[in-house]
Length: 340
Image (cartoon, rainbow, N blue to C red; front, top):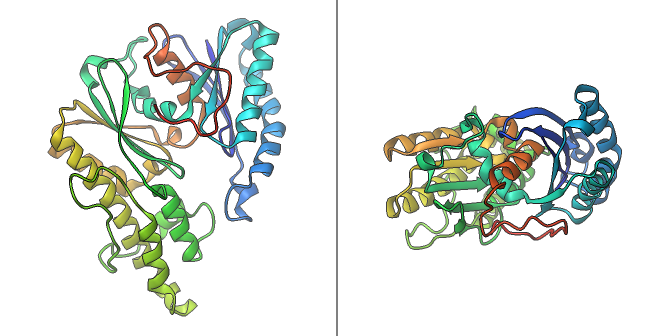
């Protein structure tokens, strides 16, 4: 069994993943309420919460499973993420590795997200690589917006990424401008349900097919200038339409760029992962796109879109045996680690 740790930001998480890639248990403590009053994650506070939470989480896990007798390997997020937060997870993982005399493997957090779309495809310990590769994936979260290819050798090549804000960051910042509390992106989606996505015009950056990149900072600036002279009452009345239009602009850019890449390549499947993959509009638009392009659509399970330990354990399982050349199973941590 793999015991997996995740602590890249403000989620303290453990998971137990079998040698066949099946998730047997998950234990998570979220810090959203702790950080809500500050409007975002406070790194020092997050580190302290990890210190407080991992021992109780491990206690819950050990009350359900005899971990020392069944855990043969430990996987832990080694980056990217907040320095102190990564350090806490690695410290706990390495300590248990020494106590239980089992090896500890460092896992790329982004690779965990990328592989999370395959978690529901596992069958008797086997992944149907021949049916899903080559694969085009979109990893979209508060810190990352990446369009990448996973080839038949399971090597990842980043095709397009944001040059400024990530999509989730743009949604959070847009929500903050409209007075929507943290976590803004998710709450903006709720407000947008009562609005018209065509009510206001917002920019879609890099419309040209040859420009394989994303940009969302101009979108946030456009919203700022649009409401700059408005009263609080005017913003309140227009909020549903503003949210719907702003959200639609984010989704349109993501879908349009993915469509450009799909039209140029030969892919068997498309995957959607990361925290923003929870967005229903985004899922709906990509479902339609994949149906139109005859691609298998693989979306991470909603409970595995945010930061979670199950995806870390699963990525370690998927890369066990013959590891892809671009995987660095290291115990050193790198807060700026890239997908490749």
